[in-house]
Length: 640
Image (cartoon, rainbow, N blue to C red):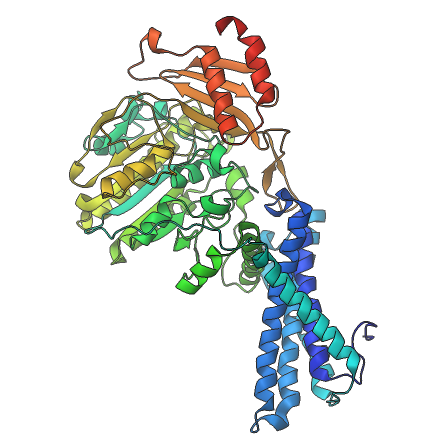
């Protein structure tokens, strides 16, 4: 391998060469990951080019600087009198560092290329193929290590007189320091807010939230459906608070889960669908963070990518999310709190991409392909594992638990229920799309799983001091105008009965805090369902545009002018729904199916009022609504 012209040549100090080589390889690794993320739909592709460059320089300098610190430690150790004669050996150990970074870079490059060109990558591998990837990784690492080890171990030219390596290394050190310091001088750091720490409450109840994907309340016997699809929930509802008219705030799982956690509309957080992520204060303002500050052990078992807290940049909230743990210390919390969203998220992403692939090929942990969970019929085994893991936590934990389980058995358009009652006699493989019998069986399976958790709590004598929340992310077929289930069981059945006024998913968090006696933060946009001041109010829901598939196999949403990912806004007031298509600007309205206790005709709002409220809602959250205002003035002029 020929020496590169810009590197110090053979008479240079070997340590100087090692520092420089390591820095260049570290920057190269970060650059390849940065280039990959800015050229595909990602959180990084959504920001301006100057900020993109800042993120690259900061992250590259962080990796290069950290690597140089490791080398500096080896250099200092090599200068100790006892070890001085083994300086070459220290350089040899140091040479393993750039070899490792270069090998990881090659692995990611190969994986990106194979997935882009052939729709096949590390996440697609299983069995012996995983082992072949691991073998290839070790061979490349061995070859790189041998080359660098020989280069820096054999070299014994400790010549200190060459100016060029010193100048280059001083220049490189300056670049690293400036790249790390400039964001601080620009005041990009230090403006992040964390969840407020509240006074510790006593006798904390376990909080178990169980949501199912795409469930209509009208398909559940607990809400009056003729088929007995939810006998366990029907029994639980007798001592629970049941929202008769509950609605989602997002027709997409990502947006819905984040709305539940933050009690904020998607129009406020900007979250509907990847690659959008929580930013700034929104990343820290959420129910899991409040409960975590209260001493809860917080666990999320949802779906990778589309519902994962870490992927969506929910910070300081979950101890464990979908099998991944982040060890949170006061130091790490301080660092993340003073780092801008785009910086911290990119660092997390590139680290996570590498770690996931290494664990997969070395048979430490299987890398989950999110596409399998949304494109294929759901696997009941995966859902059952979440239930089993929850029961284990309930049995073993000596801490109060907040667990969110999102089950995919009801996710269409085909279903694979374990227990079959309504679809008996039909062939599962030929069920077709959105088969009602299989769908009803999948809801019955969901009901059984809820029952398993209730039974586990009863067996441990914890049911009387547990909050159980049952809901859904959105209606079947990603609808936002159909009723969804919302059942909350409080300890000792303290609050029970039917709530007939409209409820929504962003009401869950304030309801829980209200029960715990914790002040509801002003940033929460929902209201407590155990409040004495419940009344009808507009319920807003958002849907995306049509999703497309990126080169890694995940879906993303093509953004449109003015409204980004937001393809449709919906408003529900009393028994009526109203909708604006934000691409065609088509307006329509209708009546909610199965609405309980409808309002009087004179209490309903006009189409013009509904259109105006939706336009104002978007405007209040920073969207340009000039086109909608123009339509309002023309289309509804007679009603004004």
